[in-house]
Image (cartoon, rainbow, N blue to C red; front, side, top):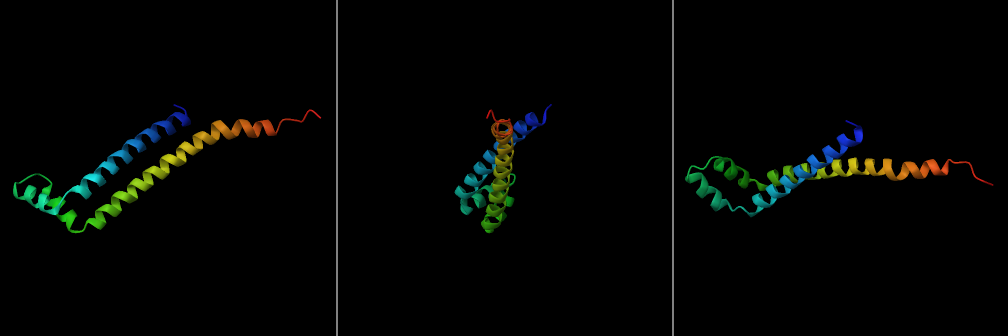
Length: 101
């Protein structure tokens, strides 16, 4: 596989990861503490952890938003590198051509 193909695969994976993180953030923000406690009392798996996370939501949100930002910046950098290779390289090679004067 070429380096460009690997970058495209990484961009797709990072995009899917960003989508998952954004959906997780939305679900976390929309979940009430009362609902989480009710799920914990019903014995739902992971509900106790959710209750603890909702006690300090800023810590969870900061982690989610940091990972979201990191994945988006990485995918944008990779996409920019692919764009640079396809757009700027032909332009710079044209500017090095000898003039016809």
